[in-house]
Image (cartoon, rainbow, N blue to C red):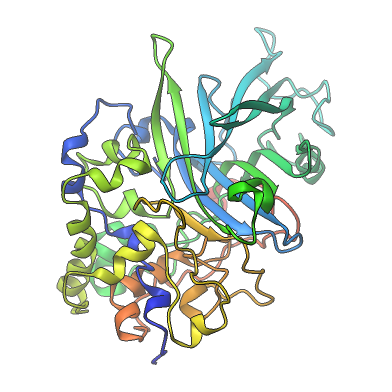
Length: 459
């Protein structure tokens, strides 16, 4: 099988997997300075603050808005009672936006939570009867939140007393969980919506990649390791004009997106313990001793780290693919892997980019400080028939132009690391054979499926 693709359109599609440990040797931090699917030593012991995935896409049913989703708490077992899962009331959860290319947050949406626990010493139950609404007195534990929009000019409270959707205890306790989800969607001043609560784990992949890259013979593929688990989601649907530089989404359509968690220290200060932009960065790249440091680093510092560019242009994963499977990647330096990871993708001359009216796909404008983040061109309309391989298949709204729930980021990144952006060819065998989520995505905000209430070991 061969697929001809535009080289510049695909530069760096797998860049999320190319940072390496030595790039961050100077950034060692104490335990607790860390993010994503148990990817770093410190955060693996602090799951409520572990940011697992970030999604950013033009809303398919409201194309003048952008949907931002960020998930926390990996591997939530649906039957993990009696306390189930909650956001950490001692933390700040952030989705950050850079709209001028300097790698600094121009807009921060920040959630903080507080517990409302009525159980006391009288019961161990999460609820003492069927729960039919978020304010049902049968619900004995709930979390309320405050959502702020923070800019260099100040802070504004968007939601002062929101209620997060509870964990999906089961059909006897929550006979119509969809209603609870709907009630947890809150309108925002000036337009837009927000959601906080439990959701299905929508990332699909075979995590046996960590068993010597699928057993060194591609035999351990096809199993969606995350099937049946839940996560906690914070979501926004925001008018594109609210995110764009100077409010002009036509002239300034590209934004950078990432998410962080700040944890309060004993002294009352705050420290960043999680950072996530592009998928699979920390899982597949830094050595164990460097992972915590990467999660404490703001994107604006990426370009200052000694050896960073060298490690991007000489990715370890490419060498492993050659060693284990004989797949020879293009010669180093891999300049094809730099553009999306540090700058965004510029306009090319081939058939894929020919239909793009702007000068870039998602290259940062303005000050353009190289940094790792998820970049989205908000002016590209939703695809009528989304392709799971995104830009790789000519679907310009897909990853790495932002990230949709249906984008198969594992296959996209594996192909790019193997040289798809240079050769213009796909390697059919290089796949984890997990092409879609086990649950269907919704057609309206927040799109991510409802959480499961069935134990994982019964699937």
